[in-house]
Amino acid sequence: MNYKLIKMNIHGDERGKLVSIEGGQNIPFEIKRVYYIFDTLPNQERGKHAHKELEQIIIAIDGACQFVLDDGQKREEIWLNRPDVGLYIGKNMWREMRNFSYGCKLMVLASTHYDENEYIRNYEEFKKQKNNV
Ligand code: T46
Image 1 (tube, rainbow, N blue to C red):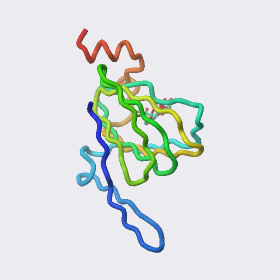
Image 2: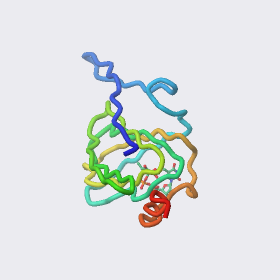
Image 3: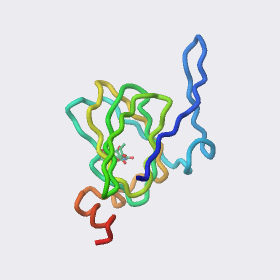
Image 4: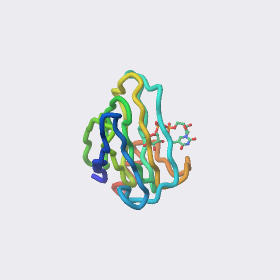
């Protein structure tokens, strides 16, 4: 499975907490794009696609949601629920997001600019490509 959880350092004191993310240091790719997802709802699912080239790190900076990760053979579920843990997803992994807490906010660091042609939005097509059928 081409994913892993990355623990970020927290700088905390009586004023609150801060996490710093620096390109070339705790991120395994050059950051080309940052986007964020908010106003999510518990009964809405997102994702349901894979990327041919894109690598990303996703951080639940507020709230929680569940990720389903699938490499064409195995499926695993993980919860993202900490602002100091990033989910790295490498190339060619199917992802689905569900069970958002109200107001969950996800910040995403991406290795490429947005390109719809690089998405695989059909699960059967994804499985065929993974298994070289
Ligand atoms: C992923 C999860 C965590 C853009 O115009 N630019 C962008 O950078 C992105 C990411 C999306 N869009 C447009 C494309 C769609 O019309 O925004 C709309 C929603 O995108 P999408 O349906 O792909 O959103 P999610 O939440 O299903 O998935 C996104 C990322 O696409 C995906 O790579 O891992 O967030």
